[in-house]
Amino acid sequence: MREKVLLAVLLIFSFVILTGCKSGPGITIENNNNMVYNSRISGANEIDKVIVYYFKDGFLVPVTLTAEAGGEPAKTALSNLFSFDAPKPFENMLREVRLINFDVADGLAVLDVSKEFLKGEVQLKKLQIVFTLTEFQDITGVRISVEGEPFEEDFERPELINETPSQDTAAEISTVTVYYADKDRNYLVPVTYAIKNPNLSTEEKASYALARLLEGPGPDKKLGRIFPDNVTLKNFYIRDTIAYVDVGKDLLLDLLDESHLEKIAVESVVQTLTSIEGVEKVQFLIDGKVMGSIAGHVNIGEPISRIHWINLISTE
Image 1 (cartoon, rainbow, N blue to C red):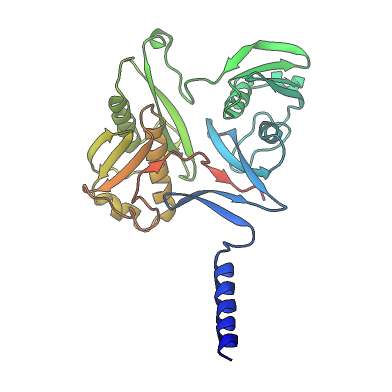
Image 2: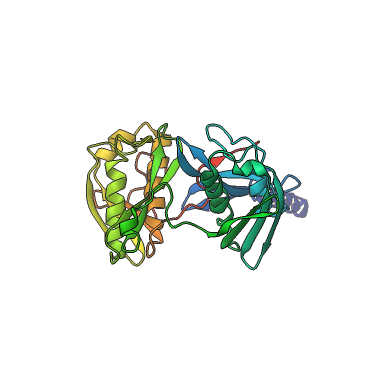
């Protein structure tokens, strides 16, 4: 009798362990410092992601789309660009253009497109293609032909996005990319600034970029302000590739009931600073102390790495 009771207890214990180890029906979450940005659903309907560039309010914006896994990622990204409308609220300049042929060899993406490519905003269409394809590590250049006829020269990924320096400073500049919010404060929009000093240190670039981000995009741009006018940057420094951003408690009050705004505020700082060579992570401080979150919605208790899948949109 005693042996039967012991066996029953062992069976129940094993069942509890086995069921407790499951995280749901085929769902695995990739967690970055408890900030859930990227998810991958495994199983028969496996989902992957690609980054595609669309336009919003005149700005080129990276958008993360879910897609069926198992195919070639670059072709999946292009299939969303050609002959498809962009997901709301974005605009696709290539929606009327057909992709005739596509191949990648030795880092060069070669594609042939229909003649509709040459109608309207040709340069904007080119930027969509080049930025989208060069998101892939194995693609460093793009060659475009239009129904078999070569179009200009091969293209590399532009150093600037949504901003162009004047010609007289092009050879003597440093660049920083600031991630603002769109005017509805739903998506991040990269804007590159050209600085007339080619010899800025990593900390000088980061300080400049952070200052531009906190002060906002200005009234002349169709972008949204993320941070309040009274936000206080108490300290900023970089140590061992980690940027430390110390803000005052005044930010807590402004973001206390804005869970979505808190998320985009954190992501804007992380993306802006980690776009600078020499900065790999960002640690937020509140009045000099490490806090669990800014307003209770996003974990900032540990240094945060660059977020790859930004502006995620579900296509389901």
